[in-house]
Image (cartoon, rainbow, N blue to C red; front, side, top):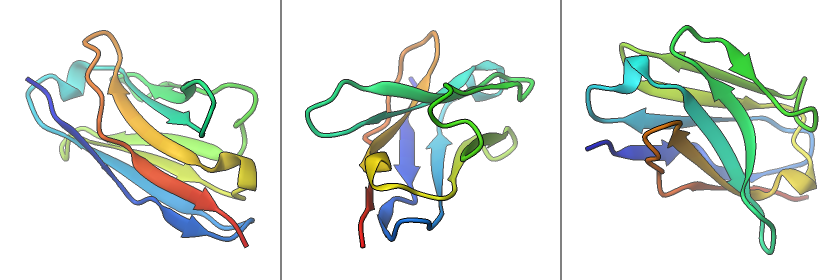
Length: 113
């Protein structure tokens, strides 16, 4: 059983930054590819970053240059740094274990002046 707990969301002004965290329980973290997704109101959930056990990362073009995913296997935590936040980044952000399909409860990010 794996539990994922996201944190770090909040209300931020356009142009600001946030670092989201996802703490995992269980023994599989260090060998699991992790993903960050987001879901805006009325929209489908979309992938914004993945990081494999060796810390290779993949991003969609829409967030490249602003989003950075990283991981600390000793802390069983994956991070998502988001810079230059835009109103369209407003969404609930979720972490996910790729393959074994566990999800966290999400953390709300709201970008507004």
